[in-house]
Each structure stands twice: as structure tokens, then as C-alpha cells.
Image (cartoon, rainbow, N blue to C red; front, side, top):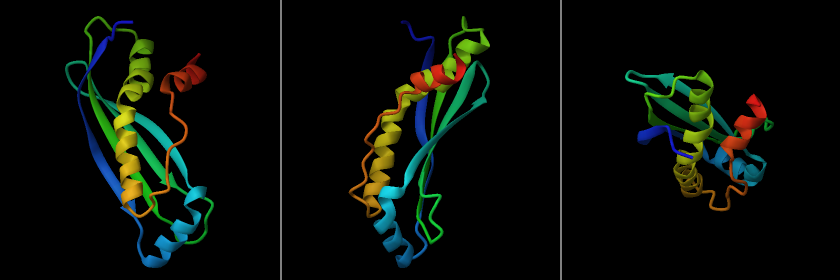
Length: 140
């Protein structure tokens, strides 16, 4: 299949790690395996058939009532859509499936590095995210 878009650039738009004190760090260390990774995608139209695609990844524990750490990265890709692409459905697939599948490996590397170097070397991402499968489940 021929790609009908080009990723012009990609970058870490926002990187955040919050652990306000030692007590929070120790509680996070004790509960890190209860943390969950969530992903969200949003986009913003730019000029000249360009779109900013943001993948927001959060690693946190929402059920803990105690102090907890929060890890969050917004990773952006700027995409130029081919001029012959006019259907909204095709653009939606590019934004929600094709681009995320292409840029996610770099976001994942950055994210794991952030978590590991923040004092949690045991954290790994076991399952790979298949944005195409998620897109098909939601829109087909």
C-alpha cells in the first residue's frame, strides 16, 4: 500500500514526571506494577493540508488514594497529507491509525527511558499497541 501522507517532523512536545517527595517515591516504588498506561490521540489542522497529530501517554495509578507519581508525555507528529486525499474517512485513518503506528515506537522508547531513569528500572511495556486494530474496532 502506498502512503498518502508524509511525516514532516516529530518531537516530544511535553514531558512530565511528578513525584513531589520521598514518601511518594517510596509508595510509587511499592505500587508501580499497579500503574496503567493510557493513550489518547488528538489532532489539529494546520495550513497546506498539514495536521499535527498528538499521542498523549499517561502512566499512573488512579485507584490509589495515597500519594502517587505521574508520568506523562505528549509526542507530536506533523503530517503532510497528499493533495489527492479528500475523504474525511481516509484522513481520519491516517490521523488515528497510520501516523500513530509509525511514530509510536519512538514515543515508547522515550517513555520507557523516562520511567526507568526516574528510579523504576523494572517497568517494561509488554504489549505492543496496534493502532490499526484499535481504529478498526472503533470505526468499522
